[in-house]
Length: 287
Image 1: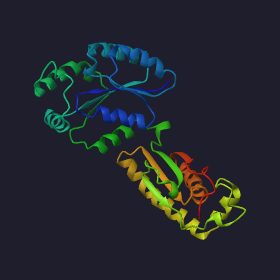
Image 2 (image 1 turned 45 degrees about the vertical axis):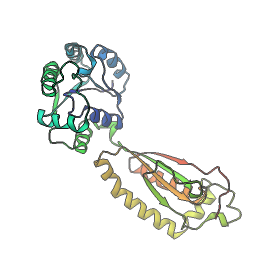
Image 3 (image 1 turned 90 degrees about the horizontal axis):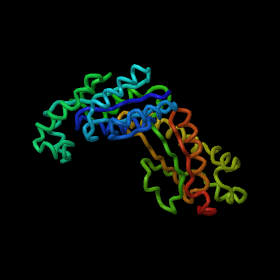
Image 4 (image 1 turned 60 degrees about the vertical axis):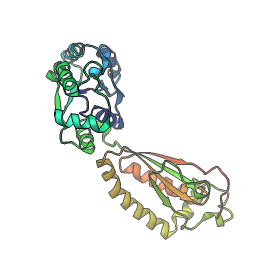
């Protein structure tokens, strides 16, 4: 059976960010779930899928319904945890003013302070049965991400960052979604070897040619060292996806070989990795 995490709490305390972080580490997530649908989500979690849902006052349903459903789940031995996010009214007022978003109860209570008080009263049944109450008053966004990962990022969620490595040819343009761009046009080029020119970088003969170059090996060593230092710091700041683009002139030889090598190393480090060769089929490339 999978794990079920029910995120609730006052508006402005960080529920959206908490849910996004849970999604990043592999949970199936549903925002603004009506309390009457909790039992259906329970069935989904029983199929060995970790699930996280947000239940709060936006659903316009009595939250006592959620309280009863959650108590029944716990009595039945369902692995469900209620995470309640709280925050001081002073900070909540400031956050709503900064974001200029209306409070969910604004239509019923235009005064923001009274809306917060009414919301706390409506949420009282869920706060009473919460397994964990997290006060985000002093939290920065990265602090909340770290807290969520530390509590729920276990087992199959130990490697939350997804790294996409893309080879490309500069003659066709740099990938628009690249976070990091590495230029390997300074390396020895198989294009000038007649028997290698028509072959893609995925062929062993091309790989061997590129990897025999001492500068290639030094480049890989320095790149691994750099990424080994950098990626944990991206994780610390809450980055869940990273695209590393490696480019040569035509995107057929050197960039392909280096992308395969770097992708294999990143996978060994525990990251979830995909390797793509954007331009390998575009032709024989240019020097």
